[in-house]
Image (tube, one colour):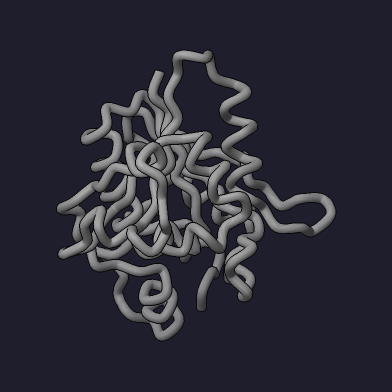
Length: 200
């Protein structure tokens, strides 16, 4: 089995997330893709605007009707209020897989370039293959600053031609001032946001 992990704040989940998820499953023949809202990201100082339960519920709506997509509570808020670390999640997932199964992490190029700031970056590269969603002009040579070994570089795969210029920051801004978000957020997610009075 080929299992993908796509983590993030998902505050809120939008059509850009959906495009990346679809492209990853298609390009890398993933059997399952977990979409994992993070309780508390260690590298983001600001807390999410929406509660974790709302973000998980919206991710579940994003996954509806998408073959192989699964919302996951693997990074629910910790009881001690601590940060969720990707390395811990990957090790839990690895422990649930058979030895022959493959594990992939989906992330954006900008986030991946900050990998050395993540907890246990070498462990992260050892636990999984990495699908890096690249922006125009981004190449594997762009990763030189990470000083990856040849073996580590072999576990990094670029996913090109996914260009959906939507950001959660822009979606929240539009929602806050009452602007239309059709074309930015799936209707089911937008309905949830409106029903629960989020981001206004």
